[in-house]
Length: 312
Image (tube, rainbow, N blue to C red; front, side, top):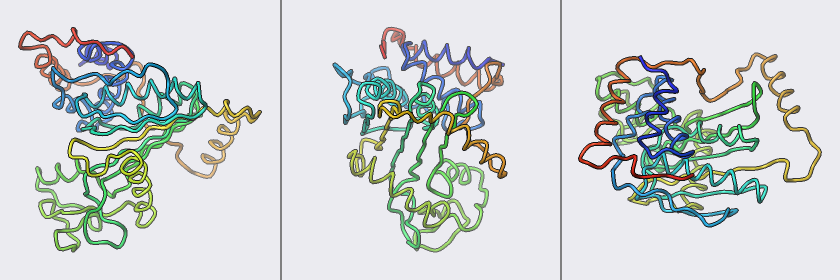
C-alpha cells in the first residue's frame, strides 16, 4: 500500500519537482486511485529523458499557441494551466492552445486547479478521428472530451465528459479481453452497427445529436482555432480561464452557485465534482510496484530526472 500524497511526492520529484510537476503527478496518481489506470501513471510510458519543458513565456499573455510535441504531455498541460491562471488574473480572461500533445490523462484535475484558484476553467481535447457524426457512417473527429470547473469548497462543480459513447481505452480493453460491446455505441468499417471490438472503425456520439455537436465544439476550438486537427505529432488541447471578478460587477457568483447546487440536488440531481481524493486515500501494492518500475526506468542509465527542473 502507498498513500496518495506519498505517491504524488515521489512522482513529482522524479518529474523535476515544482508546481507543474506536482500538478501533473497529482493528476496521474488520482486517475489510478479513481480506477482509471489507462489515464494514470501508464502515461509515463510516453516519458523520455530528453523531453523538453514547455517553453516559458516572458510575461502573461491573454492568448497563446504552443507546440508541445517535444514535451511530456502531462507536464506541458500542467505548465500551461499555471501560466493560464496568472494570465487570467491579469487580463480577466485568457486562453492557451496546445499542439502536438500526446496522452496526458483526464482534463478534470487541470480545470479543477483553476476553480480552486477562484477562476472558471474550461478545457477540451481533440484527437485522431474515431467518432462518427450523428447520423454518419465513418469517423470524423476524436472522442473530444470537454471539461469545466467553477466554485470552491463544497459548492465546487467539475464536469469532465467525453462526447463519444465510449473511449478508445474502452475499445482496447474490450479487444484485449474479447468482451462484447454494448449495442448502439460503435460501427464497423462498412458503417454498420457492431458489438465486436475487433471490428470497430468508429464510435457513435454520446446522446446522439447533442453529443455530436459537443464533440464538434471541441474540434472547432482545439482542432481548428488551436491548429491541432490533422497534426501528426499529437492532439490539440485548449484551456480557457475566466476571472469573474475582473468584470467589475457586484454579482456574488459563489452564492448563486450554492443556490444552483441546492436546487439541483433538491430536484434529485447529482452534483458532479470531477473526482478528487481524500487526504487519507491509499493505493494498493500493485500500483506501488508499477510506480517503482516507472521511477526506476526514469532514473536509469545514469540520467536522473532530478537533474531536469520545471520551474512553474
